[in-house]
Image (cartoon, rainbow, N blue to C red; front, side, top):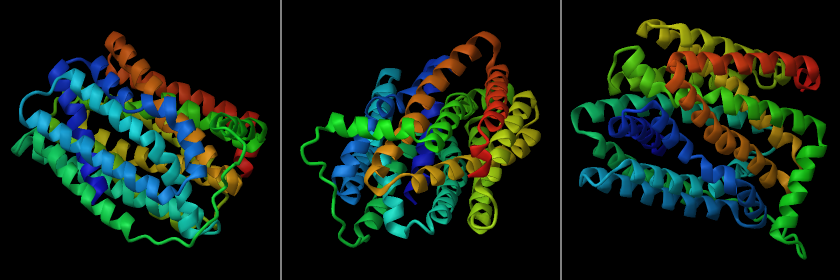
Length: 382
């Protein structure tokens, strides 16, 4: 329920940035602003996650995200919103996520155990992407009928659902590794050394980095594609994101079913290369119906790639370092990638157009993926 509100806000925030600026580059900047704090602080967030009660940390962070949504609501409702405020509130949300994401990601294994981790990540992805379908659709309808402010208001109210769920969770007591005598910086360096020196983790992290920087930013330009390329409205934007979510939820269910029956490395290879090829095809489409079909399969391949990568990193990491390994993952996947990616693709879109910029980024990920899976056979054998 809460993620439905979050995806509604994603639609509203992108559309609000486009309305206030009428500039694709500014839309990219707003998207990047939500990720910049993750790039700056998520590694520190991983150290804190390994030292503290992860569940309590997630509860505090979700409460602060509710405050951010409520502030958006009031600013838009009263007409005081500006691009500066949109960027500022996006930065605040990103700062909270820098500490929430490592804690939440590394909490999953404590809820389900190592044996069921990949199934759990796949099912979690299903819930996330079910919200990705409903949220944009409802967000587009609310924008068209009630206005932008109420999208943020509904999101603020929806945080009651996630907070209620979190407060109902009871975990068995676990000893926290206090890392006595070590500073946060020493703990951070310990985690980074593990990532760099563990071959499987390092090559997987590099793959995640390239796909985060050059693969995911097609979503940042989706408002521009909806309005300028396909001639649509905010509701069109919602349908496009909903198509991605529909494919993603199918992938989550399929992955949960076949997780123990198929080689994860082979699924990762097919998902990564398929994703790049499909995004390239989407960049060439000028038909709404064709774009929706392509995005359905883009969402499917995207979740196959992301869920497998996430699950592999969590199972490879030792318990004492899992928070920091997932912080490094968040730093790349939610921080550096979404900061650099929208900035680069937004600047390129200003010069050559949004569809062409998406096509260039897809060619980069396709080329790197083909090279990486050939250069590092361990990726295919995982």
